[in-house]
Length: 458
Image (cartoon, rainbow, N blue to C red; front, side, top):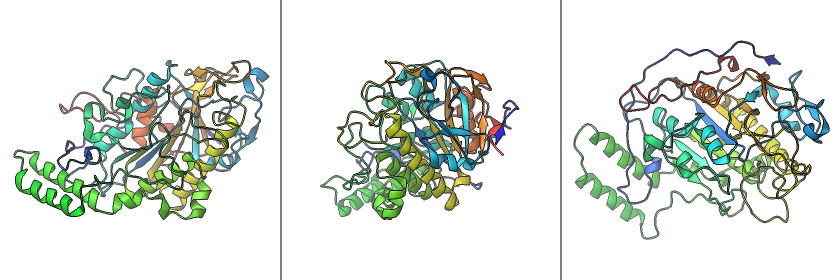
């Protein structure tokens, strides 16, 4: 096991010349969010990608990855810690598979901020900023701009929209913020559970054209556009290329195949788990393999038998619907085993396919839960002051722990990690200098004002 000592330090600044492009809707099909492209040259270095798993609602640090078995019962809860494959590191008994894969990941036990309200906390999580502006872009939008996909697939995809009373505004992750709509994601999954990927009838429909738009009619539109829409100026070439790529996305097979879970074997789908989280993480692997740069996943684990859909806020475990230590959809006894099925399958799959070195996997909530059990012993409330995150791949040093909490996992004891430093670490892992400027003037609005935690790498 590795525990880190040195503080973070800044990385060397670099300058990259980027082509700023915008979306189009000339085909009349609402696909501008698909069209992010560097039209001048592909990146010559090894390109990194990211799967960002949001444990939506705020996963309990003390019941998962930062257990305190010596604290009083009203703090520690009923679950016991188990040893991982890395000596000295323990996690909850609810995650035995993840315990055996500890060599692949680092646990950050000192995440911290001061916002206990879901909407604002989710905006903090997705932007990597303690006080994000209203038009702050998400990690995915920034990667879409700086590291666009070079294959005929979207650069940024979001699997399972946030839903329920705790969801962030759409502007936080479904738009490109000040970067523009061209850098928004392709979003799969509705807020009311009508597109459950574990359902046998699930099919991605985003590439479907309108019923009256036949392939011949689509081709005719493309030909007409090439004849009458010839913008002048320095952006004209990029505009034409984007039109061509829009047409290619609709008529080509690459993106459609990447989104087709039926191309996976029944054995593989079973290994990830026949629930929304398992199938979404399998789909995320397919998308990364096809060339998508960042895939966001809401950590909805589905419903227990006999339950009716209420929300995708799996990890918001106040004990209102089901007790936190029960086995219903909003309980650790249901959610943690499904995370323990899906996340190890993803890490193993990425590793066996040679993708883990180039794919950063992040699992984190917008905050943690109160160290002391509330609600008459039924739940834990919001707690941003100290919580945990898991990172793997893309150079992250596995079998390690960074930071420490106090004796009840209530406050950071050592090496606090701010949203800014966490965001800078993500960018560093993905090969982007955090200080890279996003504004067109080349001077303002850096990707991150934080410092990457270099001790997480090695």
